[in-house]
Length: 98
Image (tube, rainbow, N blue to C red; front, side):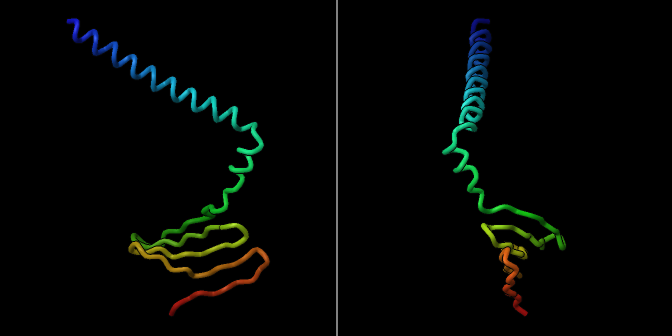
């Protein structure tokens, strides 16, 4: 009987510590959101996926942006092929391999 009670109390203690840890992390993120240096570091999100289209079960096209360039990449069977690169000034480099 005492072993079960100790196990339940230990479980409650561990779950409480986990919830406290999550709360502290969230609290620090909210406090850090007002810090200018951390905002600048978060603003350096240089690469983002703009759109994805599935061609078939193993092939998809991914359009992503890095800094001021857009890249169109075909991903198939674990390999990737750069199809097009375009900077925001409008200059396009075609990298089709036929």
